[in-house]
Amino acid sequence: MDMIDYITPFTSTVDLQTGIIGDAPLIVTRRLSDVRGLYADAQAEAALVSDNPLTYEVYYGYNSPEVEGQLGYCTTIIRPGEVGDEYFMTKGHYHAKADRAEVYYGLIGEGYLLLQTPEGKINIQEMRAGVVAYVPPHWGHRTINVGSENFVFLSVFPADAGYDYKTIAEHGFASIIVEREGRPTVAPNPRYQVK
Ligand code: PAN
Ligand code: ZN
Image (tube, rainbow, N blue to C red; front, top):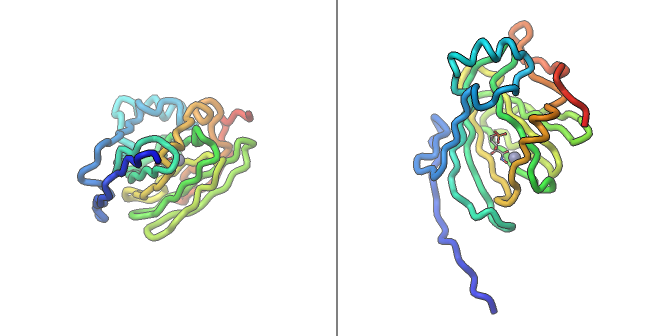
């Protein structure tokens, strides 16, 4: 029989006031310059790039081996803010292994989870502290901070899911979330390219 390479069980802690994982082996920081072309209003984006605000950070809890059977987890902290009237958001992706699902758990603030099939069918889920959201296989997904404080959630995903950012970068999501009369509103994305 093959020897199993056991991983030693462990715990780590998410600070519930901030969403920070204190001993995170990897922190990814996204400033506006890292997500160029993401927002629908290119002029507003260009005007803000000199300030280059931090829009979100991802704290990984574990450098999981990227193989079937393993799980990865991380917290995402999205700052409040807008580019034009479009709220700060993540890049969004399909999973490279498209049939991998994921769970999100809301910790702080208010956000929208925007999901899309490759055919452009949209689904939107509202998230806040305590809400568990299920991201089914094959749905592209992006989160958006629609509140006035940080929006923070925990993600748990198959470690071999991977990230397909290219499809979103090239085609976008069919909908955008914008502030209209002080409220988050779903609008058609003028830059959406049907696949
Ligand atoms: C999440 C996301 C995280 C950041 O952990 O990776 O919220 O969003 P982007 O990866 O789109 O920048 C997840 O869905 N992992 O699969
Ligand atoms: Zn994902």
